[in-house]
Image 1 (cartoon, rainbow, N blue to C red):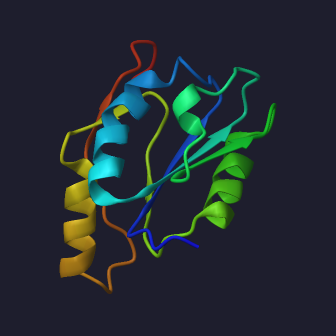
Image 2 (image 1 turned 30 degrees about the vertical axis):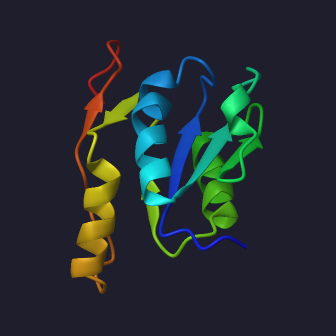
Image 3 (image 1 turned 60 degrees about the horizontal axis):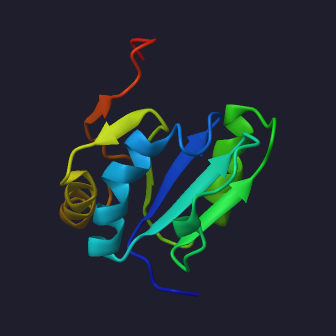
Length: 125
């Protein structure tokens, strides 16, 4: 099993490519940090070509509700730190690096929060 510093979890009901706002912001950060991406996908949409990578787990779970998507992704994670975002959120370019940095500085913290930009124009949350 690879030694990832963090597993980033993105549950989605819309799938690819509608979730691009999130993955486009995350992929460079994941590669720079040597992190793992786990997408828990409740849609019937096809996966992107880049999902066939050793550092990506794409869980195909059509029709599964959000809570179950998250639980499956938690169980699939290989890293000691889990970072969770949403399929409509665009994390800042330093979001993942700051998460890793804050966990190193505060190893006993149960949770650390980071800001993301809501990419949805339909809902406030």
